[in-house]
Length: 268
Image 1 (tube, rainbow, N blue to C red):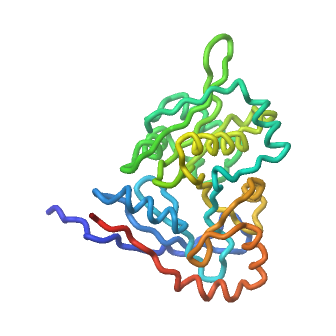
Image 2: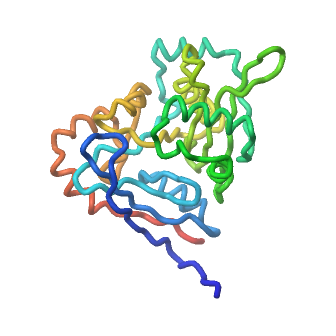
């Protein structure tokens, strides 16, 4: 028997599990399935409310005793690159950017495995096979693109990094990024964010959504180097400096968080 999906999104909370960013913490996520004709509008609306997409699921943190994870975004036209970021852009002027549909390839998977084995060998993606990787790239019912970066090697273009992105009505959401870990001198992680910001301005989009900035996590601190940076907390976007100042009032933030509403888009 075939069942019709509900007319409105249904939200669920995951069971507590170890936090991948902060020691002695547990995480829970609020999530909903992404399906049907309203998928783009739902992705647009919830992305502005701190949610992230993973294949056909939208989620955001819902931890009872912690508010360290905050969705972060760069106001694209306001970004002021630091001196080191300017040097990184200059160093990588030879890189070629290519925008493609979300289709998985063997070179992408090889680069992905090399990246995971070198940077996140004990992470949740370490056991992903080619089929899992293809699902991650291709399972989307919103406007998704693959941004690939190439350099010339022996006269041919070689893939050195790529990013899976969603095109929102107000920005670019960087869903997942991979780069060659052996090219450390290029600082490809920083370069890709800077170039995605450039791409956003070319497309007249206001923001680049970076995923979560986690207060107190050295793994995520690099995002605070892109200025100005906004984070989503207590139902609004604020500057990261203001967010850091509010960390002294953690108890109040935690009490308020569970009352934060979710605004759903019209189905029309």
